[in-house]
Length: 479
Image (cartoon, rainbow, N blue to C red; front, side):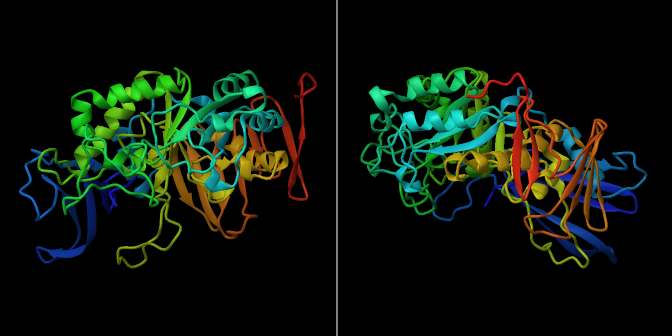
Protein backbone atom coordinates (compact mmCIF):
# COMPACT_ATOMS: atom_id res chain seq x y z
CA UNK A 1 0.00 0.00 0.00
CA UNK A 2 0.83 3.67 -0.40
CA UNK A 3 3.02 3.03 -3.40
CA UNK A 4 1.92 4.89 -6.50
CA UNK A 5 3.53 6.58 -9.50
CA UNK A 6 1.38 9.71 -9.06
CA UNK A 7 -1.63 10.43 -6.88
CA UNK A 8 -4.46 12.44 -8.37
CA UNK A 9 -7.97 12.15 -9.73
CA UNK A 10 -8.76 13.19 -13.27
CA UNK A 11 -12.34 13.87 -14.33
CA UNK A 12 -13.43 14.59 -17.88
CA UNK A 13 -16.76 15.23 -19.58
CA UNK A 14 -17.95 16.94 -22.73
CA UNK A 15 -14.62 18.45 -23.73
CA UNK A 16 -13.58 19.65 -20.29
CA UNK A 17 -11.61 18.12 -17.44
CA UNK A 18 -10.54 18.65 -13.86
CA UNK A 19 -7.48 17.43 -11.94
CA UNK A 20 -7.82 17.03 -8.17
CA UNK A 21 -4.52 16.64 -6.37
CA UNK A 22 -3.09 16.50 -2.85
CA UNK A 23 0.46 17.93 -3.01
CA UNK A 24 1.55 16.24 0.23
CA UNK A 25 1.84 12.91 -1.70
CA UNK A 26 0.47 10.99 1.28
CA UNK A 27 -3.02 10.26 0.04
CA UNK A 28 -5.04 7.55 -1.62
CA UNK A 29 -8.15 8.01 -3.72
CA UNK A 30 -11.43 6.23 -4.22
CA UNK A 31 -13.86 7.09 -6.98
CA UNK A 32 -17.22 6.16 -8.38
CA UNK A 33 -20.56 7.64 -9.33
CA UNK A 34 -23.25 9.36 -7.32
CA UNK A 35 -26.27 11.63 -7.69
CA UNK A 36 -25.76 15.31 -6.91
CA UNK A 37 -28.59 17.84 -7.26
CA UNK A 38 -30.60 15.16 -9.06
CA UNK A 39 -27.83 14.76 -11.65
CA UNK A 40 -25.69 11.72 -12.33
CA UNK A 41 -22.19 12.70 -11.20
CA UNK A 42 -18.63 11.43 -10.91
CA UNK A 43 -17.34 11.30 -7.36
CA UNK A 44 -13.91 11.09 -5.74
CA UNK A 45 -12.76 10.75 -2.12
CA UNK A 46 -9.33 11.56 -0.71
CA UNK A 47 -7.89 9.64 2.25
CA UNK A 48 -5.10 11.75 3.76
CA UNK A 49 -3.99 11.72 7.37
CA UNK A 50 -3.20 14.60 9.72
CA UNK A 51 -1.80 12.02 12.16
CA UNK A 52 -1.12 8.27 12.02
CA UNK A 53 -4.45 6.49 11.93
CA UNK A 54 -4.27 4.47 15.15
CA UNK A 55 -6.62 3.98 18.06
CA UNK A 56 -3.83 2.73 20.33
CA UNK A 57 -2.03 6.04 20.89
CA UNK A 58 -2.99 9.67 21.25
CA UNK A 59 -1.06 10.89 18.22
CA UNK A 60 0.24 14.44 17.69
CA UNK A 61 -0.35 16.19 14.35
CA UNK A 62 2.57 15.61 11.92
CA UNK A 63 0.54 17.23 9.08
CA UNK A 64 -0.85 20.62 10.17
CA UNK A 65 -2.55 21.16 6.78
CA UNK A 66 -3.98 18.89 4.06
CA UNK A 67 -4.09 20.75 0.77
CA UNK A 68 -6.19 20.13 -2.34
CA UNK A 69 -5.44 21.60 -5.74
CA UNK A 70 -8.03 21.90 -8.51
CA UNK A 71 -6.70 22.31 -12.05
CA UNK A 72 -8.99 22.76 -15.10
CA UNK A 73 -8.01 20.89 -18.27
CA UNK A 74 -8.89 21.37 -21.94
CA UNK A 75 -7.31 20.03 -25.14
CA UNK A 76 -3.75 20.14 -23.80
CA UNK A 77 -1.98 18.28 -26.62
CA UNK A 78 -3.84 20.25 -29.34
CA UNK A 79 -5.09 17.25 -31.31
CA UNK A 80 -8.70 18.56 -31.35
CA UNK A 81 -9.82 15.62 -29.20
CA UNK A 82 -10.32 15.90 -25.45
CA UNK A 83 -9.61 12.67 -23.55
CA UNK A 84 -7.51 11.12 -20.77
CA UNK A 85 -4.25 11.94 -22.59
CA UNK A 86 -4.92 15.67 -22.14
CA UNK A 87 -5.32 15.15 -18.38
CA UNK A 88 -2.06 13.19 -18.23
CA UNK A 89 -0.10 15.73 -20.31
CA UNK A 90 -1.47 18.62 -18.24
CA UNK A 91 -0.49 16.85 -15.01
CA UNK A 92 3.01 16.09 -16.30
CA UNK A 93 3.61 19.62 -17.55
CA UNK A 94 2.47 21.21 -14.31
CA UNK A 95 3.54 18.77 -11.58
CA UNK A 96 6.12 16.18 -12.75
CA UNK A 97 9.59 17.72 -12.72
CA UNK A 98 12.26 16.42 -15.05
CA UNK A 99 15.25 14.73 -13.47
CA UNK A 100 17.80 17.43 -14.17
CA UNK A 101 20.89 15.18 -14.02
CA UNK A 102 19.83 11.89 -15.53
CA UNK A 103 22.55 9.33 -16.04
CA UNK A 104 22.75 8.62 -19.77
CA UNK A 105 24.93 5.58 -19.10
CA UNK A 106 21.88 3.92 -17.52
CA UNK A 107 19.97 4.60 -20.72
CA UNK A 108 22.65 3.14 -23.01
CA UNK A 109 24.04 0.28 -20.95
CA UNK A 110 23.52 -3.39 -20.52
CA UNK A 111 21.85 -2.86 -17.17
CA UNK A 112 21.32 -5.35 -14.38
CA UNK A 113 22.61 -7.32 -11.45
CA UNK A 114 25.59 -9.53 -10.92
CA UNK A 115 24.92 -11.83 -8.00
CA UNK A 116 27.55 -13.04 -5.59
CA UNK A 117 24.95 -13.98 -3.00
CA UNK A 118 24.47 -17.54 -1.87
CA UNK A 119 20.70 -17.26 -2.04
CA UNK A 120 20.87 -16.94 -5.82
CA UNK A 121 23.18 -19.87 -6.48
CA UNK A 122 25.69 -17.65 -8.29
CA UNK A 123 28.60 -17.47 -5.87
CA UNK A 124 31.53 -16.08 -7.83
CA UNK A 125 34.73 -14.29 -7.03
CA UNK A 126 35.93 -11.05 -8.58
CA UNK A 127 38.35 -12.80 -10.94
CA UNK A 128 35.41 -14.69 -12.48
CA UNK A 129 33.22 -11.61 -12.57
CA UNK A 130 35.72 -9.47 -14.47
CA UNK A 131 35.97 -12.15 -17.16
CA UNK A 132 32.19 -12.20 -17.47
CA UNK A 133 32.14 -8.42 -17.89
CA UNK A 134 34.87 -8.55 -20.55
CA UNK A 135 32.82 -11.04 -22.57
CA UNK A 136 30.01 -8.49 -23.07
CA UNK A 137 31.91 -6.24 -25.49
CA UNK A 138 29.07 -4.93 -27.66
CA UNK A 139 27.86 -2.13 -25.33
CA UNK A 140 28.71 -0.35 -22.09
CA UNK A 141 27.55 -1.96 -18.85
CA UNK A 142 26.11 -0.67 -15.62
CA UNK A 143 26.23 -3.38 -12.98
CA UNK A 144 24.69 -3.63 -9.53
CA UNK A 145 26.78 -6.01 -7.47
CA UNK A 146 24.58 -8.05 -5.15
CA UNK A 147 25.91 -9.70 -2.01
CA UNK A 148 29.44 -8.28 -2.00
CA UNK A 149 29.21 -7.54 1.73
CA UNK A 150 27.91 -11.01 2.58
CA UNK A 151 29.96 -14.20 3.11
CA UNK A 152 28.91 -17.27 1.09
CA UNK A 153 27.03 -18.76 4.04
CA UNK A 154 24.76 -15.70 4.24
CA UNK A 155 22.19 -13.95 2.10
CA UNK A 156 22.55 -10.50 0.57
CA UNK A 157 19.76 -9.08 2.74
CA UNK A 158 21.66 -9.94 5.91
CA UNK A 159 23.43 -7.22 7.92
CA UNK A 160 25.79 -5.58 8.58
CA UNK A 161 25.08 -2.60 6.38
CA UNK A 162 28.18 -0.52 7.08
CA UNK A 163 31.05 -2.98 6.78
CA UNK A 164 33.50 -3.28 3.89
CA UNK A 165 33.28 -5.93 1.15
CA UNK A 166 33.57 -9.46 2.48
CA UNK A 167 37.00 -10.91 1.53
CA UNK A 168 35.49 -14.32 0.76
CA UNK A 169 34.70 -13.00 -2.74
CA UNK A 170 38.30 -12.07 -3.48
CA UNK A 171 39.79 -13.77 -6.52
CA UNK A 172 43.24 -14.87 -7.61
CA UNK A 173 46.12 -13.19 -5.77
CA UNK A 174 43.63 -11.61 -3.37
CA UNK A 175 41.97 -9.67 -6.22
CA UNK A 176 39.43 -7.61 -4.25
CA UNK A 177 36.32 -5.48 -4.86
CA UNK A 178 38.19 -2.20 -5.25
CA UNK A 179 40.61 -3.57 -7.86
CA UNK A 180 37.71 -5.25 -9.64
CA UNK A 181 35.74 -1.99 -9.78
CA UNK A 182 38.70 -0.11 -11.32
CA UNK A 183 39.33 -2.83 -13.91
CA UNK A 184 35.66 -2.83 -14.85
CA UNK A 185 35.78 0.93 -15.44
CA UNK A 186 38.71 0.47 -17.85
CA UNK A 187 36.60 -1.74 -20.12
CA UNK A 188 33.48 0.41 -20.11
CA UNK A 189 31.58 -1.05 -17.16
CA UNK A 190 30.51 0.76 -14.01
CA UNK A 191 30.06 -1.29 -10.89
CA UNK A 192 27.95 -0.12 -7.98
CA UNK A 193 26.64 -1.76 -4.85
CA UNK A 194 23.13 -3.19 -4.58
CA UNK A 195 21.85 -3.38 -1.05
CA UNK A 196 19.23 -2.51 1.51
CA UNK A 197 19.96 -0.02 4.25
CA UNK A 198 20.18 -2.24 7.30
CA UNK A 199 18.90 -1.19 10.71
CA UNK A 200 20.09 -4.25 12.58
CA UNK A 201 23.34 -4.87 14.38
CA UNK A 202 25.70 -7.72 13.48
CA UNK A 203 23.54 -10.22 15.33
CA UNK A 204 20.65 -9.21 13.05
CA UNK A 205 18.03 -9.16 15.81
CA UNK A 206 19.51 -6.87 18.48
CA UNK A 207 18.51 -3.25 17.98
CA UNK A 208 20.99 -0.43 18.01
CA UNK A 209 19.71 1.74 20.89
CA UNK A 210 20.93 4.91 19.17
CA UNK A 211 18.83 4.25 16.07
CA UNK A 212 15.15 5.24 16.48
CA UNK A 213 12.75 2.86 14.77
CA UNK A 214 9.19 3.24 13.62
CA UNK A 215 6.50 1.40 15.55
CA UNK A 216 3.44 -0.35 14.28
CA UNK A 217 0.05 0.42 15.80
CA UNK A 218 0.63 -2.18 18.52
CA UNK A 219 3.87 -0.55 19.68
CA UNK A 220 6.21 -3.09 18.03
CA UNK A 221 9.16 -2.21 15.77
CA UNK A 222 8.07 -2.43 12.14
CA UNK A 223 9.71 -3.18 8.83
CA UNK A 224 10.51 -6.85 8.27
CA UNK A 225 10.84 -8.09 4.71
CA UNK A 226 11.67 -11.58 3.59
CA UNK A 227 11.96 -12.84 7.17
CA UNK A 228 15.53 -11.61 7.61
CA UNK A 229 16.94 -8.21 8.42
CA UNK A 230 15.29 -4.83 8.87
CA UNK A 231 15.34 -2.14 6.28
CA UNK A 232 15.10 1.56 5.62
CA UNK A 233 11.37 1.81 6.12
CA UNK A 234 11.80 0.78 9.77
CA UNK A 235 13.85 3.90 10.51
CA UNK A 236 12.38 7.01 12.05
CA UNK A 237 13.75 9.09 9.22
CA UNK A 238 12.39 12.38 10.53
CA UNK A 239 14.49 12.10 13.71
CA UNK A 240 17.68 10.94 11.98
CA UNK A 241 17.51 13.56 9.26
CA UNK A 242 16.82 16.34 11.74
CA UNK A 243 19.86 15.56 13.92
CA UNK A 244 22.16 14.66 10.99
CA UNK A 245 22.85 11.10 12.15
CA UNK A 246 21.40 9.62 8.97
CA UNK A 247 23.63 11.73 6.76
CA UNK A 248 26.73 10.95 8.84
CA UNK A 249 26.05 7.22 8.70
CA UNK A 250 25.46 7.40 4.98
CA UNK A 251 28.67 9.37 4.34
CA UNK A 252 30.71 6.83 6.29
CA UNK A 253 29.19 3.95 4.39
CA UNK A 254 29.72 5.48 0.95
CA UNK A 255 33.33 6.24 1.81
CA UNK A 256 33.96 2.65 2.94
CA UNK A 257 32.69 1.37 -0.41
CA UNK A 258 34.51 3.98 -2.51
CA UNK A 259 31.25 5.38 -3.92
CA UNK A 260 32.27 8.53 -5.79
CA UNK A 261 30.63 11.25 -7.84
CA UNK A 262 29.54 9.71 -11.13
CA UNK A 263 29.01 6.25 -9.64
CA UNK A 264 25.69 4.47 -9.60
CA UNK A 265 24.33 2.90 -6.42
CA UNK A 266 21.17 0.85 -5.98
CA UNK A 267 19.23 1.09 -2.75
CA UNK A 268 16.56 -1.58 -2.82
CA UNK A 269 13.06 -0.63 -1.64
CA UNK A 270 13.67 3.02 -0.70
CA UNK A 271 11.23 4.46 -3.22
CA UNK A 272 8.96 1.44 -3.30
CA UNK A 273 8.46 1.50 0.47
CA UNK A 274 8.57 5.28 0.89
CA UNK A 275 5.45 6.39 2.69
CA UNK A 276 5.01 4.44 5.94
CA UNK A 277 3.17 5.66 9.01
CA UNK A 278 5.04 5.74 12.34
CA UNK A 279 2.85 5.19 15.38
CA UNK A 280 5.39 6.30 17.95
CA UNK A 281 4.07 9.28 19.96
CA UNK A 282 7.68 10.50 20.19
CA UNK A 283 8.32 10.66 16.42
CA UNK A 284 5.03 10.10 14.56
CA UNK A 285 4.90 10.23 10.75
CA UNK A 286 2.18 9.99 8.15
CA UNK A 287 2.62 8.49 4.71
CA UNK A 288 3.09 11.98 3.33
CA UNK A 289 5.74 13.17 5.78
CA UNK A 290 7.65 9.91 5.34
CA UNK A 291 7.67 10.24 1.55
CA UNK A 292 9.01 13.75 1.88
CA UNK A 293 11.78 12.44 4.14
CA UNK A 294 12.71 9.90 1.47
CA UNK A 295 12.88 12.75 -1.04
CA UNK A 296 15.31 14.57 1.29
CA UNK A 297 17.54 11.48 1.27
CA UNK A 298 17.48 11.24 -2.51
CA UNK A 299 18.32 14.95 -2.85
CA UNK A 300 21.24 14.49 -0.44
CA UNK A 301 22.63 11.58 -2.46
CA UNK A 302 22.14 13.47 -5.72
CA UNK A 303 23.99 16.48 -4.29
CA UNK A 304 27.08 14.25 -4.12
CA UNK A 305 26.87 13.48 -7.84
CA UNK A 306 25.89 9.85 -7.15
CA UNK A 307 23.34 8.30 -9.49
CA UNK A 308 20.78 6.62 -7.25
CA UNK A 309 18.49 3.83 -8.43
CA UNK A 310 15.77 2.08 -6.48
CA UNK A 311 12.61 -0.01 -6.72
CA UNK A 312 9.53 2.12 -7.20
CA UNK A 313 8.54 5.01 -9.45
CA UNK A 314 6.91 7.86 -7.55
CA UNK A 315 6.10 11.48 -8.16
CA UNK A 316 8.43 13.68 -6.12
CA UNK A 317 11.10 10.98 -5.97
CA UNK A 318 11.54 10.47 -9.71
CA UNK A 319 13.35 13.78 -10.20
CA UNK A 320 16.19 12.59 -7.93
CA UNK A 321 16.16 8.82 -8.59
CA UNK A 322 17.84 7.97 -11.89
CA UNK A 323 16.03 4.70 -12.39
CA UNK A 324 13.00 3.40 -10.53
CA UNK A 325 11.00 0.28 -11.16
CA UNK A 326 7.39 0.85 -12.12
CA UNK A 327 5.38 -1.86 -10.41
CA UNK A 328 1.95 -0.26 -10.86
CA UNK A 329 1.41 -1.04 -14.56
CA UNK A 330 -1.85 -2.92 -14.74
CA UNK A 331 -2.04 -5.73 -17.27
CA UNK A 332 -5.43 -6.88 -16.01
CA UNK A 333 -8.94 -5.58 -16.57
CA UNK A 334 -10.02 -2.15 -15.31
CA UNK A 335 -11.34 -1.85 -11.78
CA UNK A 336 -13.73 0.53 -10.11
CA UNK A 337 -17.12 -0.63 -11.31
CA UNK A 338 -17.52 1.68 -14.33
CA UNK A 339 -19.28 0.20 -17.33
CA UNK A 340 -17.17 0.03 -20.49
CA UNK A 341 -14.04 1.06 -18.56
CA UNK A 342 -10.65 0.46 -20.14
CA UNK A 343 -7.10 0.21 -18.85
CA UNK A 344 -4.98 3.04 -20.24
CA UNK A 345 -1.19 3.40 -20.41
CA UNK A 346 -0.93 6.58 -18.32
CA UNK A 347 2.57 5.91 -16.93
CA UNK A 348 4.48 6.95 -20.10
CA UNK A 349 2.34 10.09 -20.51
CA UNK A 350 3.42 11.20 -17.03
CA UNK A 351 7.01 9.98 -16.71
CA UNK A 352 8.59 9.14 -20.07
CA UNK A 353 11.34 11.64 -20.84
CA UNK A 354 11.13 13.01 -17.29
CA UNK A 355 13.17 10.23 -15.68
CA UNK A 356 14.36 6.71 -16.51
CA UNK A 357 12.53 3.66 -15.27
CA UNK A 358 12.37 -0.08 -15.81
CA UNK A 359 9.53 -2.36 -16.67
CA UNK A 360 10.53 -5.85 -17.74
CA UNK A 361 7.45 -7.75 -18.89
CA UNK A 362 7.90 -8.22 -22.64
CA UNK A 363 10.04 -6.03 -24.93
CA UNK A 364 7.15 -4.53 -26.90
CA UNK A 365 5.06 -3.88 -23.80
CA UNK A 366 8.04 -2.43 -21.94
CA UNK A 367 8.67 0.04 -24.77
CA UNK A 368 4.97 0.96 -24.91
CA UNK A 369 5.23 2.02 -21.28
CA UNK A 370 8.46 3.95 -21.89
CA UNK A 371 10.56 1.57 -19.79
CA UNK A 372 13.89 -0.19 -20.10
CA UNK A 373 14.32 -3.89 -19.50
CA UNK A 374 16.79 -4.80 -16.76
CA UNK A 375 18.06 -8.25 -16.01
CA UNK A 376 20.49 -10.21 -13.88
CA UNK A 377 23.55 -10.87 -15.96
CA UNK A 378 24.67 -14.03 -14.19
CA UNK A 379 21.34 -15.66 -14.98
CA UNK A 380 21.28 -14.88 -18.68
CA UNK A 381 23.11 -17.99 -19.80
CA UNK A 382 26.16 -16.31 -21.26
CA UNK A 383 27.04 -13.67 -23.82
CA UNK A 384 24.45 -14.74 -26.41
CA UNK A 385 21.59 -14.30 -23.96
CA UNK A 386 22.92 -10.85 -23.04
CA UNK A 387 23.07 -9.94 -26.74
CA UNK A 388 19.49 -11.12 -27.27
CA UNK A 389 18.23 -9.13 -24.30
CA UNK A 390 20.08 -5.94 -25.22
CA UNK A 391 19.12 -5.86 -28.89
CA UNK A 392 15.50 -6.80 -28.25
CA UNK A 393 14.79 -3.83 -25.95
CA UNK A 394 17.71 -1.64 -24.84
CA UNK A 395 18.81 -0.22 -28.19
CA UNK A 396 15.19 0.74 -28.92
CA UNK A 397 14.74 2.27 -25.48
CA UNK A 398 17.62 4.71 -25.90
CA UNK A 399 15.86 6.11 -28.99
CA UNK A 400 12.76 7.16 -27.03
CA UNK A 401 13.98 7.46 -23.43
CA UNK A 402 14.35 11.25 -23.56
CA UNK A 403 11.17 11.91 -25.54
CA UNK A 404 7.95 12.97 -23.85
CA UNK A 405 4.59 11.59 -24.94
CA UNK A 406 2.41 13.94 -27.00
CA UNK A 407 -0.40 11.50 -27.71
CA UNK A 408 -1.46 7.88 -27.26
CA UNK A 409 -3.97 6.59 -29.75
CA UNK A 410 -5.87 3.32 -29.46
CA UNK A 411 -5.50 1.32 -32.65
CA UNK A 412 -7.24 -1.77 -33.97
CA UNK A 413 -4.56 -4.06 -32.53
CA UNK A 414 -2.89 -1.99 -29.83
CA UNK A 415 -1.54 1.52 -29.22
CA UNK A 416 0.27 4.21 -31.16
CA UNK A 417 2.56 6.54 -29.18
CA UNK A 418 3.45 9.93 -30.64
CA UNK A 419 6.28 11.98 -29.12
CA UNK A 420 6.55 15.72 -28.63
CA UNK A 421 10.06 15.67 -30.13
CA UNK A 422 8.83 13.71 -33.16
CA UNK A 423 8.60 10.04 -34.01
CA UNK A 424 6.17 7.28 -33.12
CA UNK A 425 5.87 3.76 -31.76
CA UNK A 426 3.16 1.31 -32.83
CA UNK A 427 2.72 -1.70 -30.54
CA UNK A 428 0.60 -4.69 -31.50
CA UNK A 429 -1.16 -6.12 -28.44
CA UNK A 430 -3.24 -8.64 -30.39
CA UNK A 431 -0.58 -11.28 -29.74
CA UNK A 432 0.72 -11.05 -26.16
CA UNK A 433 3.14 -13.94 -26.62
CA UNK A 434 6.89 -13.46 -26.62
CA UNK A 435 6.60 -12.77 -30.35
CA UNK A 436 4.51 -9.61 -29.91
CA UNK A 437 5.78 -6.96 -32.28
CA UNK A 438 6.16 -3.20 -32.76
CA UNK A 439 7.27 -0.62 -35.32
CA UNK A 440 9.36 2.38 -34.24
CA UNK A 441 9.73 5.37 -36.56
CA UNK A 442 12.36 7.79 -35.25
CA UNK A 443 14.34 10.53 -37.06
CA UNK A 444 13.46 9.23 -40.50
CA UNK A 445 14.39 5.63 -39.72
CA UNK A 446 12.14 2.63 -39.10
CA UNK A 447 13.02 -0.13 -36.68
CA UNK A 448 11.32 -3.44 -35.88
CA UNK A 449 12.22 -6.32 -33.55
CA UNK A 450 14.14 -7.91 -36.44
CA UNK A 451 15.84 -4.66 -37.41
CA UNK A 452 17.22 -2.99 -34.26
CA UNK A 453 19.32 0.19 -34.08
CA UNK A 454 23.05 -0.22 -33.41
CA UNK A 455 24.53 -0.02 -29.94
CA UNK A 456 26.20 3.23 -28.80
CA UNK A 457 29.50 1.66 -29.82
CA UNK A 458 28.31 1.09 -33.38
CA UNK A 459 27.76 -2.65 -33.00
CA UNK A 460 24.91 -3.84 -35.22
CA UNK A 461 22.79 -6.96 -34.91
CA UNK A 462 20.55 -8.98 -37.18
CA UNK A 463 18.13 -11.63 -35.96
CA UNK A 464 18.26 -15.13 -37.41
CA UNK A 465 16.05 -17.93 -36.07
CA UNK A 466 15.18 -15.90 -32.98
CA UNK A 467 18.77 -15.05 -32.04
CA UNK A 468 20.88 -12.01 -32.83
CA UNK A 469 24.17 -12.11 -34.67
CA UNK A 470 26.36 -9.08 -33.92
CA UNK A 471 28.54 -7.28 -36.44
CA UNK A 472 31.34 -5.15 -35.01
CA UNK A 473 32.60 -2.00 -36.75
CA UNK A 474 35.92 -2.43 -38.50
CA UNK A 475 37.81 -0.31 -35.99
CA UNK A 476 36.35 -2.14 -33.00
CA UNK A 477 38.98 -3.86 -30.88
CA UNK A 478 37.41 -6.94 -29.38
CA UNK A 479 38.39 -7.95 -25.85
